[in-house]
Amino acid sequence: MDGRLRSPPFLVCLLCLLFGPLAAQAVPPAHQQWFTVLLDGRKIGSFESRRDVHGDEVTTTQTLDLSLERLGVRVALRNEESSTETVDGKPLSFRSASRFSGVETVIEGRVHDDIIELTTLGNGEQHQRQIPWPKNALLTEGQRLAGMHAGLAAGTRYDVLAFQPSSLDTTMITSVVGTAEDIDLPQDRMHLFPVEQTIESAGIPMKTHEWIDAEQTVHKLTLPVMGVELTILACDHACATAPNQGTDVFERTLMHSPRPLMIGELGGAMRYTLIPRESGMKLVLPETGEQRVHYKAGEVLVTVLPIPHPGAESKPGPDDYTPNDWLQSQAPEVVRLAKKAVGNATSPHERMHNIETFVRGYIRTKSLNVGYASALEVARKPEGDCTEHAVLVAALGRTFSIATRVVDGFAYASGFGGQKQVFVPHAWAQAFVDGRWESFDAALPGFDTGHIALWIGNGDPWRFYSGLDLLGRLDMRQAESMTEISPQAHRSGRDPHRR
Image (cartoon, rainbow, N blue to C red; front, side, top):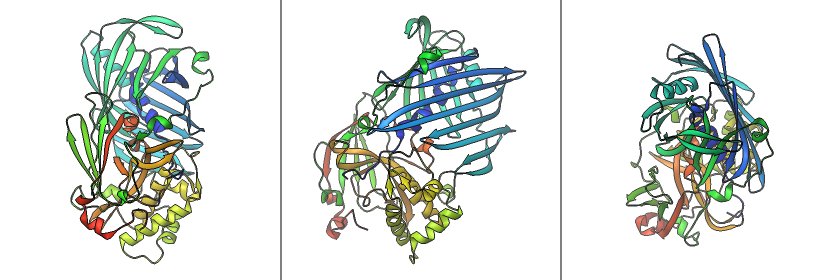
Protein backbone atom coordinates (compact mmCIF):
# COMPACT_ATOMS: atom_id res chain seq x y z
CA MET A 1 0.00 0.00 0.00
CA ASP A 2 3.12 2.15 0.32
CA GLY A 3 1.59 5.14 2.05
CA ARG A 4 -1.81 5.11 0.40
CA LEU A 5 -3.60 3.74 3.47
CA ARG A 6 -4.55 6.32 6.06
CA SER A 7 -5.15 5.60 9.74
CA PRO A 8 -8.52 6.57 11.22
CA PRO A 9 -8.48 8.77 14.33
CA PHE A 10 -9.56 5.78 16.40
CA LEU A 11 -8.12 6.77 19.78
CA VAL A 12 -9.66 10.24 19.61
CA CYS A 13 -13.15 8.84 19.16
CA LEU A 14 -12.60 5.96 21.57
CA LEU A 15 -11.56 8.25 24.42
CA CYS A 16 -14.52 10.56 23.84
CA LEU A 17 -16.81 7.56 24.01
CA LEU A 18 -15.20 6.12 27.12
CA PHE A 19 -14.79 9.27 29.17
CA GLY A 20 -18.57 9.73 29.23
CA PRO A 21 -19.47 6.55 31.12
CA LEU A 22 -16.11 6.21 32.86
CA ALA A 23 -16.28 9.71 34.23
CA ALA A 24 -19.90 9.27 35.16
CA GLN A 25 -18.97 8.74 38.78
CA ALA A 26 -15.98 11.00 38.46
CA VAL A 27 -18.27 13.97 39.03
CA PRO A 28 -17.64 15.07 42.61
CA PRO A 29 -19.92 17.00 44.92
CA ALA A 30 -17.11 19.57 45.00
CA HIS A 31 -17.31 22.47 42.54
CA GLN A 32 -14.34 21.52 40.38
CA GLN A 33 -11.72 18.79 39.90
CA TRP A 34 -8.74 18.48 37.55
CA PHE A 35 -7.01 15.36 36.19
CA THR A 36 -3.87 14.67 34.20
CA VAL A 37 -4.27 12.09 31.40
CA LEU A 38 -1.44 9.61 30.75
CA LEU A 39 -1.04 6.99 28.02
CA ASP A 40 1.58 4.38 28.78
CA GLY A 41 3.07 6.79 31.32
CA ARG A 42 3.29 9.79 28.97
CA LYS A 43 1.11 12.86 29.45
CA ILE A 44 -1.30 13.36 26.56
CA GLY A 45 -3.93 15.71 27.99
CA SER A 46 -6.14 17.02 30.78
CA PHE A 47 -9.62 16.38 32.08
CA GLU A 48 -11.80 18.80 34.07
CA SER A 49 -15.02 18.01 35.93
CA ARG A 50 -17.37 20.65 37.35
CA ARG A 51 -20.62 20.31 39.29
CA ASP A 52 -22.92 23.29 39.91
CA VAL A 53 -26.21 23.35 41.84
CA HIS A 54 -28.82 26.00 41.05
CA GLY A 55 -32.01 25.57 43.06
CA ASP A 56 -33.45 22.15 42.22
CA GLU A 57 -31.15 21.56 39.25
CA VAL A 58 -27.64 20.11 39.00
CA THR A 59 -25.40 20.83 36.01
CA THR A 60 -22.33 18.69 35.45
CA THR A 61 -19.69 19.68 32.89
CA GLN A 62 -16.77 17.49 31.80
CA THR A 63 -14.04 18.76 29.49
CA LEU A 64 -11.40 16.58 27.85
CA ASP A 65 -8.37 17.98 25.98
CA LEU A 66 -5.99 15.57 24.25
CA SER A 67 -2.99 15.85 21.97
CA LEU A 68 -1.80 12.77 20.06
CA GLU A 69 0.39 11.99 17.08
CA ARG A 70 -0.09 9.73 14.07
CA LEU A 71 3.06 9.17 12.06
CA GLY A 72 4.36 12.54 13.22
CA VAL A 73 1.09 14.40 12.55
CA ARG A 74 -0.36 16.10 15.64
CA VAL A 75 -4.05 15.38 16.29
CA ALA A 76 -5.92 17.60 18.74
CA LEU A 77 -9.20 16.81 20.45
CA ARG A 78 -11.46 18.84 22.69
CA ASN A 79 -14.71 17.37 23.94
CA GLU A 80 -17.03 19.14 26.37
CA GLU A 81 -20.15 17.45 27.70
CA SER A 82 -22.68 18.90 30.09
CA SER A 83 -25.87 17.50 31.56
CA THR A 84 -28.59 19.15 33.60
CA GLU A 85 -30.73 17.07 35.93
CA THR A 86 -32.96 17.48 38.94
CA VAL A 87 -31.32 17.01 42.35
CA ASP A 88 -32.78 13.49 42.44
CA GLY A 89 -31.22 12.57 39.06
CA LYS A 90 -34.08 13.08 36.59
CA PRO A 91 -32.64 14.02 33.15
CA LEU A 92 -33.57 17.46 31.82
CA SER A 93 -31.06 18.35 29.09
CA PHE A 94 -27.57 17.68 27.75
CA ARG A 95 -25.00 19.14 25.39
CA SER A 96 -21.91 17.68 23.70
CA ALA A 97 -19.41 19.74 21.73
CA SER A 98 -16.57 17.85 20.02
CA ARG A 99 -13.72 19.29 18.00
CA PHE A 100 -11.43 16.96 16.05
CA SER A 101 -8.54 18.77 14.34
CA GLY A 102 -10.68 21.83 13.66
CA VAL A 103 -13.91 19.96 12.78
CA GLU A 104 -16.62 20.70 15.34
CA THR A 105 -19.94 18.98 16.03
CA VAL A 106 -22.46 20.10 18.64
CA ILE A 107 -25.33 17.96 19.92
CA GLU A 108 -28.00 19.46 22.18
CA GLY A 109 -30.97 17.64 23.68
CA ARG A 110 -33.91 18.42 25.94
CA VAL A 111 -35.78 15.56 27.58
CA HIS A 112 -39.60 15.83 27.73
CA ASP A 113 -41.83 12.91 28.74
CA ASP A 114 -39.43 10.20 27.48
CA ILE A 115 -38.76 12.12 24.23
CA ILE A 116 -35.52 13.92 23.35
CA GLU A 117 -35.88 17.15 21.37
CA LEU A 118 -32.57 16.93 19.56
CA THR A 119 -30.58 19.61 17.73
CA THR A 120 -27.36 18.84 15.85
CA LEU A 121 -25.09 21.60 14.62
CA GLY A 122 -22.27 20.88 12.19
CA ASN A 123 -21.09 21.54 8.65
CA GLY A 124 -22.56 25.02 9.00
CA GLU A 125 -26.05 23.52 9.24
CA GLN A 126 -28.58 22.79 11.95
CA HIS A 127 -30.85 19.75 12.10
CA GLN A 128 -33.69 19.01 14.51
CA ARG A 129 -35.49 15.77 15.25
CA GLN A 130 -37.05 13.70 18.03
CA ILE A 131 -35.76 10.42 19.42
CA PRO A 132 -36.99 8.35 22.38
CA TRP A 133 -35.26 8.62 25.75
CA PRO A 134 -33.96 5.12 26.63
CA LYS A 135 -35.94 3.63 29.50
CA ASN A 136 -34.03 3.63 32.83
CA ALA A 137 -31.05 5.47 31.32
CA LEU A 138 -29.24 7.95 33.56
CA LEU A 139 -27.15 11.04 32.98
CA THR A 140 -24.15 11.98 35.12
CA GLU A 141 -25.82 13.04 38.39
CA GLY A 142 -28.21 10.10 38.24
CA GLN A 143 -25.24 7.75 37.86
CA ARG A 144 -23.48 9.38 40.81
CA LEU A 145 -26.59 8.97 42.97
CA ALA A 146 -26.86 5.30 41.96
CA GLY A 147 -23.35 4.78 43.29
CA MET A 148 -24.17 6.62 46.50
CA HIS A 149 -27.26 4.46 46.98
CA ALA A 150 -25.33 1.21 46.41
CA GLY A 151 -22.71 2.13 49.00
CA LEU A 152 -19.07 1.17 49.35
CA ALA A 153 -19.14 -2.07 51.30
CA ALA A 154 -16.58 -4.51 49.90
CA GLY A 155 -18.25 -6.88 47.43
CA THR A 156 -21.10 -4.50 46.56
CA ARG A 157 -22.21 -4.95 42.94
CA TYR A 158 -24.60 -2.77 40.97
CA ASP A 159 -25.56 -1.94 37.36
CA VAL A 160 -26.11 1.47 35.76
CA LEU A 161 -27.45 2.17 32.26
CA ALA A 162 -25.44 5.26 31.26
CA PHE A 163 -26.60 7.61 28.49
CA GLN A 164 -23.80 9.04 26.33
CA PRO A 165 -24.62 12.49 24.88
CA SER A 166 -21.79 12.27 22.32
CA SER A 167 -23.14 9.08 20.72
CA LEU A 168 -26.83 9.33 21.73
CA ASP A 169 -26.49 5.77 22.92
CA THR A 170 -26.51 3.81 26.17
CA THR A 171 -23.86 1.66 27.81
CA MET A 172 -24.39 -0.81 30.65
CA ILE A 173 -21.81 -0.39 33.42
CA THR A 174 -21.42 -3.06 36.11
CA SER A 175 -19.46 -1.95 39.18
CA VAL A 176 -17.95 -4.10 41.94
CA VAL A 177 -16.52 -2.45 45.08
CA GLY A 178 -13.30 -3.71 46.64
CA THR A 179 -11.55 -3.22 49.98
CA ALA A 180 -10.20 0.28 50.69
CA GLU A 181 -6.46 0.81 50.22
CA ASP A 182 -3.82 3.54 50.20
CA ILE A 183 -3.15 5.06 46.75
CA ASP A 184 -0.33 7.40 45.73
CA LEU A 185 -1.39 10.39 43.62
CA PRO A 186 0.76 13.11 42.01
CA GLN A 187 0.28 15.47 44.97
CA ASP A 188 -1.17 13.31 47.74
CA ARG A 189 -1.63 9.86 49.25
CA MET A 190 -5.21 8.84 49.97
CA HIS A 191 -7.20 5.95 51.45
CA LEU A 192 -9.60 5.05 48.61
CA PHE A 193 -12.10 2.38 47.61
CA PRO A 194 -11.22 0.40 44.44
CA VAL A 195 -14.10 -0.19 42.03
CA GLU A 196 -13.82 -2.56 39.06
CA GLN A 197 -16.15 -1.61 36.22
CA THR A 198 -17.21 -3.76 33.30
CA ILE A 199 -18.43 -1.64 30.39
CA GLU A 200 -20.38 -3.25 27.57
CA SER A 201 -19.13 -1.40 24.50
CA ALA A 202 -19.99 -2.70 21.01
CA GLY A 203 -20.68 -6.09 22.56
CA ILE A 204 -17.10 -6.32 23.82
CA PRO A 205 -16.75 -6.03 27.61
CA MET A 206 -14.01 -3.68 28.79
CA LYS A 207 -12.76 -3.73 32.36
CA THR A 208 -11.61 -0.53 34.04
CA HIS A 209 -10.49 0.30 37.56
CA GLU A 210 -11.19 3.44 39.55
CA TRP A 211 -10.39 4.55 43.08
CA ILE A 212 -13.00 6.70 44.81
CA ASP A 213 -13.57 8.32 48.19
CA ALA A 214 -16.66 8.13 50.39
CA GLU A 215 -18.36 10.89 48.38
CA GLN A 216 -18.04 8.92 45.11
CA THR A 217 -15.28 11.25 43.92
CA VAL A 218 -12.85 9.52 41.59
CA HIS A 219 -9.15 10.25 42.21
CA LYS A 220 -7.61 7.65 39.92
CA LEU A 221 -8.88 5.68 36.92
CA THR A 222 -7.17 3.19 34.61
CA LEU A 223 -8.36 1.45 31.45
CA PRO A 224 -6.76 -0.60 28.67
CA VAL A 225 -6.25 1.13 25.33
CA MET A 226 -4.51 -0.67 22.45
CA GLY A 227 -2.65 -3.01 24.76
CA VAL A 228 -1.28 -0.28 27.05
CA GLU A 229 -2.75 1.52 30.05
CA LEU A 230 -4.48 4.87 29.99
CA THR A 231 -4.54 6.57 33.40
CA ILE A 232 -6.21 9.69 34.73
CA LEU A 233 -5.00 11.05 38.06
CA ALA A 234 -6.48 13.82 40.18
CA CYS A 235 -4.15 16.79 40.66
CA ASP A 236 -4.23 20.58 40.65
CA HIS A 237 -4.75 22.85 37.64
CA ALA A 238 -1.03 23.43 37.03
CA CYS A 239 -0.35 19.69 37.02
CA ALA A 240 -3.30 18.88 34.71
CA THR A 241 -2.52 21.59 32.19
CA ALA A 242 1.27 21.16 32.12
CA PRO A 243 2.75 20.63 28.62
CA ASN A 244 1.92 17.32 26.99
CA GLN A 245 4.70 14.88 26.22
CA GLY A 246 2.94 13.48 23.17
CA THR A 247 3.00 9.93 21.89
CA ASP A 248 2.63 8.37 18.47
CA VAL A 249 -0.26 5.97 18.92
CA PHE A 250 -0.32 4.63 15.37
CA GLU A 251 2.40 2.01 15.75
CA ARG A 252 0.52 0.47 18.69
CA THR A 253 -2.43 -0.38 16.47
CA LEU A 254 -0.58 -2.39 13.83
CA MET A 255 -1.00 -6.15 13.66
CA HIS A 256 2.01 -7.92 12.18
CA SER A 257 1.46 -10.59 9.55
CA PRO A 258 3.27 -13.89 10.20
CA ARG A 259 4.50 -13.81 6.59
CA PRO A 260 4.41 -11.66 3.45
CA LEU A 261 1.13 -11.86 1.50
CA MET A 262 1.26 -11.77 -2.28
CA ILE A 263 -1.18 -9.87 -4.51
CA GLY A 264 -2.12 -13.16 -6.18
CA GLU A 265 -3.08 -14.68 -2.83
CA LEU A 266 -5.22 -11.69 -1.93
CA GLY A 267 -7.27 -12.31 -5.07
CA GLY A 268 -8.49 -15.60 -3.58
CA ALA A 269 -9.86 -16.69 -0.23
CA MET A 270 -7.65 -16.25 2.85
CA ARG A 271 -7.93 -17.67 6.36
CA TYR A 272 -6.43 -15.86 9.35
CA THR A 273 -5.91 -17.17 12.87
CA LEU A 274 -6.26 -14.35 15.42
CA ILE A 275 -5.27 -14.64 19.07
CA PRO A 276 -6.17 -12.15 21.84
CA ARG A 277 -3.10 -11.14 23.82
CA GLU A 278 -5.08 -11.23 27.06
CA SER A 279 -6.13 -14.58 28.47
CA GLY A 280 -9.91 -14.99 28.55
CA MET A 281 -10.52 -11.91 26.42
CA LYS A 282 -13.85 -12.09 24.59
CA LEU A 283 -13.56 -11.45 20.85
CA VAL A 284 -16.66 -11.28 18.63
CA LEU A 285 -16.23 -10.36 14.97
CA PRO A 286 -19.01 -9.76 12.42
CA GLU A 287 -19.95 -12.24 9.72
CA THR A 288 -20.59 -10.78 6.29
CA GLY A 289 -20.98 -12.16 2.80
CA GLU A 290 -17.21 -11.84 2.51
CA GLN A 291 -16.19 -12.88 6.01
CA ARG A 292 -16.76 -16.13 7.92
CA VAL A 293 -15.83 -16.46 11.59
CA HIS A 294 -15.17 -19.64 13.58
CA TYR A 295 -14.33 -19.65 17.29
CA LYS A 296 -11.97 -22.16 18.86
CA ALA A 297 -10.44 -22.33 22.31
CA GLY A 298 -8.27 -19.27 22.66
CA GLU A 299 -8.34 -18.25 18.99
CA VAL A 300 -10.57 -17.02 16.18
CA LEU A 301 -10.45 -18.26 12.58
CA VAL A 302 -11.47 -15.60 10.05
CA THR A 303 -12.02 -16.63 6.41
CA VAL A 304 -12.27 -13.77 3.91
CA LEU A 305 -13.75 -14.41 0.45
CA PRO A 306 -13.05 -12.27 -2.64
CA ILE A 307 -16.66 -12.41 -3.82
CA PRO A 308 -19.52 -12.04 -1.31
CA HIS A 309 -21.94 -14.93 -0.84
CA PRO A 310 -25.57 -14.02 -0.05
CA GLY A 311 -27.34 -15.28 3.03
CA ALA A 312 -24.60 -14.82 5.62
CA GLU A 313 -26.16 -11.73 7.16
CA SER A 314 -29.45 -9.88 7.48
CA LYS A 315 -30.92 -7.71 4.78
CA PRO A 316 -30.68 -3.93 5.14
CA GLY A 317 -33.03 -2.04 7.42
CA PRO A 318 -34.55 1.44 6.99
CA ASP A 319 -31.55 3.14 8.63
CA ASP A 320 -29.26 1.74 5.92
CA TYR A 321 -31.02 3.83 3.27
CA THR A 322 -31.69 7.14 5.01
CA PRO A 323 -29.44 10.17 5.60
CA ASN A 324 -28.01 10.85 9.04
CA ASP A 325 -25.73 13.40 10.67
CA TRP A 326 -22.64 11.81 9.10
CA LEU A 327 -24.03 10.49 5.80
CA GLN A 328 -25.98 13.50 4.49
CA SER A 329 -27.15 11.76 1.34
CA GLN A 330 -29.86 14.33 0.54
CA ALA A 331 -27.76 17.48 0.99
CA PRO A 332 -27.68 19.40 -2.33
CA GLU A 333 -23.86 19.26 -2.57
CA VAL A 334 -23.86 15.49 -1.99
CA VAL A 335 -26.69 14.92 -4.48
CA ARG A 336 -24.86 16.89 -7.18
CA LEU A 337 -21.69 14.93 -6.50
CA ALA A 338 -23.54 11.61 -6.63
CA LYS A 339 -25.03 12.38 -10.04
CA LYS A 340 -21.59 13.29 -11.34
CA ALA A 341 -20.09 10.13 -9.85
CA VAL A 342 -22.49 7.55 -11.32
CA GLY A 343 -22.58 8.98 -14.83
CA ASN A 344 -24.78 6.86 -17.10
CA ALA A 345 -24.74 3.78 -14.86
CA THR A 346 -28.20 2.37 -14.15
CA SER A 347 -27.76 -0.78 -12.03
CA PRO A 348 -26.92 -0.47 -8.29
CA HIS A 349 -23.69 -2.43 -8.76
CA GLU A 350 -22.50 -0.28 -11.66
CA ARG A 351 -23.38 2.86 -9.72
CA MET A 352 -21.41 1.74 -6.65
CA HIS A 353 -18.45 0.79 -8.84
CA ASN A 354 -18.50 4.25 -10.43
CA ILE A 355 -18.88 5.91 -7.03
CA GLU A 356 -15.89 4.01 -5.67
CA THR A 357 -13.72 5.07 -8.62
CA PHE A 358 -14.97 8.66 -8.45
CA VAL A 359 -14.29 9.10 -4.72
CA ARG A 360 -10.80 7.64 -5.11
CA GLY A 361 -9.95 10.49 -7.48
CA TYR A 362 -12.15 13.17 -5.93
CA ILE A 363 -10.35 13.17 -2.56
CA ARG A 364 -7.16 14.60 -3.94
CA THR A 365 -5.47 15.44 -0.63
CA LYS A 366 -4.72 12.21 1.22
CA SER A 367 -4.19 13.65 4.68
CA LEU A 368 -3.98 12.58 8.31
CA ASN A 369 -4.84 16.11 9.43
CA VAL A 370 -8.60 15.53 9.35
CA GLY A 371 -10.03 14.19 12.60
CA TYR A 372 -13.26 12.63 11.34
CA ALA A 373 -15.22 14.47 8.66
CA SER A 374 -18.77 13.80 7.59
CA ALA A 375 -19.70 13.10 3.97
CA LEU A 376 -20.92 16.68 3.50
CA GLU A 377 -17.67 18.09 4.84
CA VAL A 378 -15.70 15.84 2.48
CA ALA A 379 -17.91 16.87 -0.45
CA ARG A 380 -17.10 20.49 0.31
CA LYS A 381 -13.42 19.91 1.10
CA PRO A 382 -12.07 16.69 -0.48
CA GLU A 383 -9.38 15.87 2.05
CA GLY A 384 -8.79 13.06 4.54
CA ASP A 385 -7.85 9.46 5.13
CA CYS A 386 -9.73 6.17 4.78
CA THR A 387 -12.65 7.25 7.00
CA GLU A 388 -13.40 10.23 4.76
CA HIS A 389 -13.34 7.98 1.69
CA ALA A 390 -15.70 5.50 3.38
CA VAL A 391 -18.35 7.98 4.55
CA LEU A 392 -18.46 9.72 1.16
CA VAL A 393 -18.87 6.42 -0.72
CA ALA A 394 -21.66 5.39 1.66
CA ALA A 395 -23.48 8.72 1.39
CA LEU A 396 -23.29 8.86 -2.42
CA GLY A 397 -24.75 5.36 -2.59
CA ARG A 398 -27.68 6.30 -0.35
CA THR A 399 -28.46 9.23 -2.63
CA PHE A 400 -29.58 6.61 -5.19
CA SER A 401 -31.53 4.60 -2.59
CA ILE A 402 -28.80 1.98 -2.28
CA ALA A 403 -28.40 0.60 1.24
CA THR A 404 -24.89 1.29 2.53
CA ARG A 405 -22.89 1.05 5.73
CA VAL A 406 -19.37 1.75 6.95
CA VAL A 407 -16.94 -1.00 7.99
CA ASP A 408 -13.97 -0.67 10.31
CA GLY A 409 -11.17 -3.19 10.53
CA PHE A 410 -7.70 -3.98 9.21
CA ALA A 411 -6.18 -4.04 5.73
CA TYR A 412 -2.87 -5.66 4.78
CA ALA A 413 0.08 -3.46 3.79
CA SER A 414 3.42 -4.80 2.57
CA GLY A 415 4.96 -1.70 4.11
CA PHE A 416 3.61 1.29 6.01
CA GLY A 417 4.94 3.82 8.51
CA GLY A 418 8.35 2.19 8.56
CA GLN A 419 6.84 -1.23 9.32
CA LYS A 420 6.77 -4.21 6.94
CA GLN A 421 4.08 -6.87 6.44
CA VAL A 422 1.44 -5.39 8.74
CA PHE A 423 -2.32 -5.14 8.98
CA VAL A 424 -3.22 -1.47 9.41
CA PRO A 425 -6.42 0.09 10.87
CA HIS A 426 -8.68 0.83 7.92
CA ALA A 427 -12.22 1.79 6.90
CA TRP A 428 -14.29 1.06 3.81
CA ALA A 429 -17.92 0.96 2.71
CA GLN A 430 -20.38 -1.84 1.96
CA ALA A 431 -23.45 -1.64 -0.27
CA PHE A 432 -26.37 -4.04 -0.66
CA VAL A 433 -26.33 -4.91 -4.36
CA ASP A 434 -27.54 -8.00 -6.21
CA GLY A 435 -29.07 -9.36 -3.01
CA ARG A 436 -25.86 -9.27 -0.96
CA TRP A 437 -23.57 -6.90 0.92
CA GLU A 438 -20.45 -6.09 -1.11
CA SER A 439 -17.40 -4.07 -0.06
CA PHE A 440 -16.17 -0.97 -1.90
CA ASP A 441 -12.83 0.55 -0.88
CA ALA A 442 -12.05 3.94 -2.41
CA ALA A 443 -8.99 4.62 -0.23
CA LEU A 444 -7.20 1.65 -1.81
CA PRO A 445 -7.31 0.24 -5.36
CA GLY A 446 -10.24 -1.92 -4.25
CA PHE A 447 -11.38 -4.57 -1.79
CA ASP A 448 -9.29 -7.73 -1.51
CA THR A 449 -9.01 -10.54 1.01
CA GLY A 450 -6.41 -8.63 2.97
CA HIS A 451 -9.37 -6.88 4.64
CA ILE A 452 -10.59 -8.09 8.06
CA ALA A 453 -13.80 -6.50 9.38
CA LEU A 454 -14.05 -5.72 13.09
CA TRP A 455 -17.23 -3.60 13.28
CA ILE A 456 -19.99 -2.36 11.02
CA GLY A 457 -21.83 0.93 11.53
CA ASN A 458 -23.74 3.78 9.94
CA GLY A 459 -20.91 6.30 9.69
CA ASP A 460 -21.33 7.65 13.22
CA PRO A 461 -17.77 7.91 14.63
CA TRP A 462 -18.87 7.13 18.18
CA ARG A 463 -20.29 3.75 17.26
CA PHE A 464 -17.69 3.35 14.55
CA TYR A 465 -14.84 3.43 17.05
CA SER A 466 -16.61 2.16 20.14
CA GLY A 467 -14.74 -1.12 20.26
CA LEU A 468 -11.37 -0.08 18.91
CA ASP A 469 -9.55 -0.80 22.14
CA LEU A 470 -8.97 -4.15 20.39
CA LEU A 471 -6.30 -2.46 18.31
CA GLY A 472 -2.97 -3.43 19.77
CA ARG A 473 -4.56 -6.31 21.68
CA LEU A 474 -4.58 -8.88 18.86
CA ASP A 475 -1.91 -11.06 17.30
CA MET A 476 -2.08 -13.05 14.07
CA ARG A 477 -0.71 -16.57 14.38
CA GLN A 478 -1.29 -17.78 10.83
CA ALA A 479 -2.28 -16.47 7.39
CA GLU A 480 -3.26 -19.19 4.91
CA SER A 481 -4.21 -19.04 1.25
CA MET A 482 -7.57 -20.80 0.90
CA THR A 483 -8.41 -20.34 -2.77
CA GLU A 484 -9.89 -23.82 -2.86
CA ILE A 485 -12.78 -22.45 -0.79
CA SER A 486 -13.78 -20.25 -3.70
CA PRO A 487 -12.88 -22.10 -6.94
CA GLN A 488 -15.12 -19.83 -8.99
CA ALA A 489 -13.19 -16.76 -7.85
CA HIS A 490 -9.90 -18.55 -8.46
CA ARG A 491 -10.85 -19.60 -11.99
CA SER A 492 -12.02 -16.12 -12.85
CA GLY A 493 -8.52 -14.74 -12.32
CA ARG A 494 -10.17 -11.69 -10.79
CA ASP A 495 -7.68 -9.02 -9.74
CA PRO A 496 -8.92 -7.56 -6.43
CA HIS A 497 -7.36 -4.23 -7.31
CA ARG A 498 -9.47 -3.88 -10.45
CA ARG A 499 -13.26 -3.57 -10.74
